[in-house]
Length: 135
Image (cartoon, rainbow, N blue to C red; front, side, top):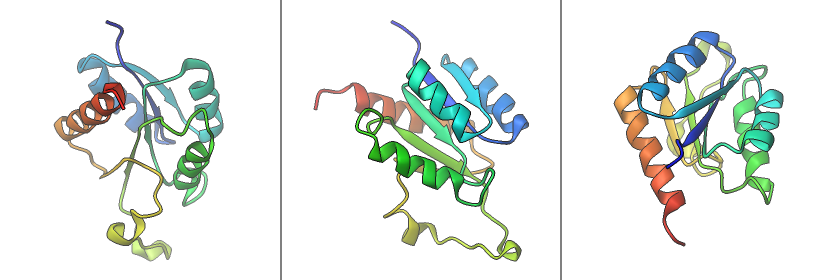
């Protein structure tokens, strides 16, 4: 059986490195991109089984907009998405209430940084098993 392929899109090189290493240790084939343009190219060419996505990259909501764009694309809409993001500083003038936002966040699961590796593994397994089950 082939390894499940996971793409991580995040502009933080240390997050990409550490999370990639953790996921490889769990047996996943890991791809990384440090922006959504590169990430989309990777999705189209490498066809990952799951996407891990940051929210705040070049803009405060780049990851959220990217997830919506994927959901609007007929070929990519079923790609499972886990958003992992740091809680933004309220001093930056941006605050988020996750309970209110989850109705428009185009992701399957939201996790906050720092992420617990075991919880991440469990969420990945949940989404991948959902994708592999007959509909």
